Length: 289
Length: 44
Image 1 (cartoon, rainbow over the protein chains, first blue to last red):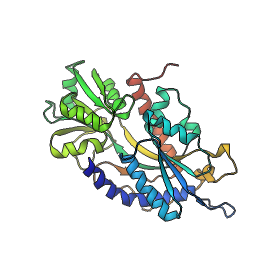
Image 2: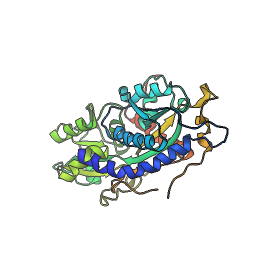
Image 3: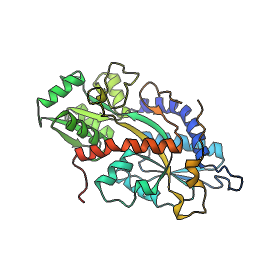
Image 4: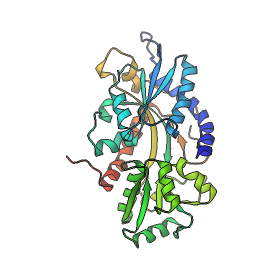
């Protein structure tokens, strides 16, 4: 996984240059009467622990922003409760344009449906920009009998209650997406929670579970090494590196899951005179072609 | 700006705020359905 992250962070580094331009454009104030931004350090709240793929990408971004804007962009990791702790913290920060927050669909859609929270994603956050999309990947051990998506579905349907799948934790995308696939496909399989994506992969590799729908960063080293078979991906198109691997949507047309990481800010309503969060939607962004 | 990261399907987005809001809204339905599929909806 380390090699995968390192390789992709190097590639992502080029992308971040563009993202920096977008954040700057979105946060900057176009009117002559408006104040400059930033004039002091900016905090970036990451609702996950340090060292993961999101944290690593945001750290690269923070470095670029600091150099471009000549102010420190300081990451604050507030992990826990599936991202709820950091998200609540960001939602209740001062809405002055000096707190950025990176979240995903889990914090935006899944968590509010599953538990009582002290934030409302629609009310408490304004999107600045989406950093990246990625599909998830349905994998099994290479020794698992089904080799194709059709074979996998048929095999699982013929064994109700006998198969289990790894998850990075209840309520995470690695739990929700296979649960949705199971409903769509008529599969009865058991979720086995682990504390993380790598933990879920360990369960799969040990044979404790039979399949896993995970992040590319969790599964691709195993695929490259031959121990793991990639059965399907969840995006709206096949992944270029794996042109022979189908998407779930080829069998279930509207079953498309693209995970995203996005930058948000708290809206300005609680402090109308502060910097330009409310103007975000009015400011055209520069996206180099 | 739609190059793919190493052909792995990790797609840099770099959307404007309006585009981000639109994409985020549209992505919600599948997650809402997935929470229901997993039986994890909180009790009202």
